[in-house]
Amino acid sequence: RNGTQSKPRQHRLAIGEQMFSGVRYGPGAVSGAISGAAYAGGCEFALVCDFLYAAEHARFAITEVTLGIMPGAGGTINLADAVGERRAREIIYTGKPFSVKDAHDWGLVNKITKADELLSEAIATATQIANNAPLSIKQVKKSISVSRQVDKHNAYLYELEAYNRLIPTDDRTEGVLAFNEKRKPRFSGK
Image (cartoon, rainbow, N blue to C red; front, side, top):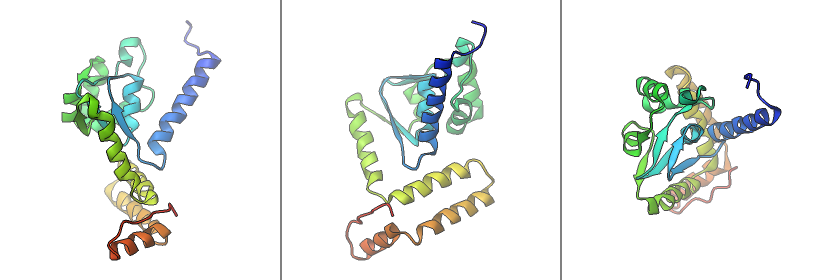
């Protein structure tokens, strides 16, 4: 009650921070499939995904201020990146829920699906991504993340560096060969 945290609570928070960082900065693409209410930490977790699909009945909210706390897993940063600063301020300051339609219109959700199609749609997209070169996905993910944090000139320099790291890879060789032979590439992640 005096504002200090217990050891088990600190441990849970540390694990949560590692999980959020792993999704946000990990090498693979992470798609979220929202099938209900993504409130508070659930919404913050959705925000660290690379993209989101959501069922027609999904709802979102960042409710921490209604509990005397604030987002602590990147919500203030990631929501502003997704929906714009002014809208993020309103969403976070009020703690008021918003619909999946609003989430889609504002750029938070990539696609709205029928509830019974949500997982198959998300898995189809994940499969398409998984069929691409894993090293390319990793470099693209890092490049997009860096580009959101630096000026355009340095973002371009980073992108060029990431591109050049793919040139000597087996996957690049295989991709070009498969293209020339008019067949599907067999990427190895090397």
